[in-house]
Length: 70
Image 1: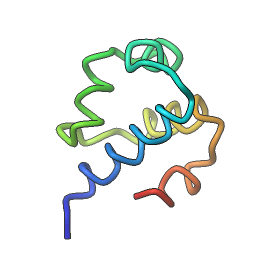
Image 2 (image 1 turned 30 degrees about the horizontal axis):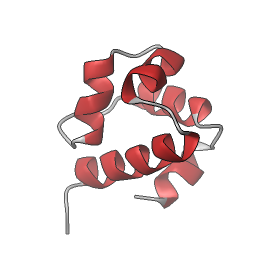
Image 3 (image 1 turned 180 degrees about the horizontal axis):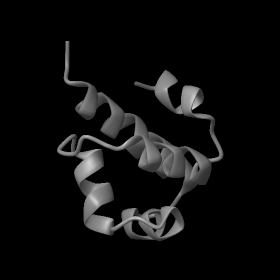
């Protein structure tokens, strides 16, 4: 099975693209650094729960809905 970080990153990228925003714009919306968001999408980051919540809120999804794509 593929690493959870890679699967989460792909799910995040799909949702961000549905929103129609760049990584930079999305990072600003989440109040996260652009390079951090890029690292998440590439599966390089082990994302903290606090940041998962920020990401889900920005996407207007519950945490459970966000993880359905994982």
